[in-house]
Length: 180
Image 1 (cartoon, rainbow, N blue to C red):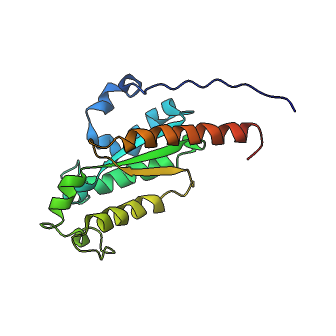
Image 2 (tube, one colour; image 1 turned 90 degrees about the vertical axis):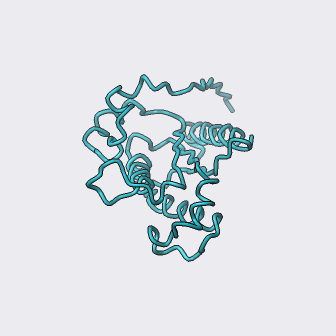
């Protein structure tokens, strides 16, 4: 049996890879024409860290003419990314932010108004689970998605990222060697 040695480099994706016109413009999330112009720049990345704010479920979207909320815009962007042919060997690390505000907001603005399938009342864990399921349902490419509620006071998030990237590198290596 021949042993093959591989070297992997981990790097941080710099914002300079995204055109400046898209960095400051949140409307790019729903503008697929612009999205298609730059998405290829990320081909071959090991993992994508995707951040979505749970507390944005009732916040108006980028366009004042659109009835969509920021969370639905994030869902649409997530769907476009996770099903893009540019990312067939990429894992997605899905971070949920705004959990504290989400907990508070559930008592004031019912989640069921925006997610009719939700039946959990003011239970933040159930609400987060419902939204997570909605995001995972759009993953037609069946990419590995590692989901985590980000809490700045919890180091588990960092460990999750490292474990998710390690798992992706391992899976990609096995595929390259035709062992998976």
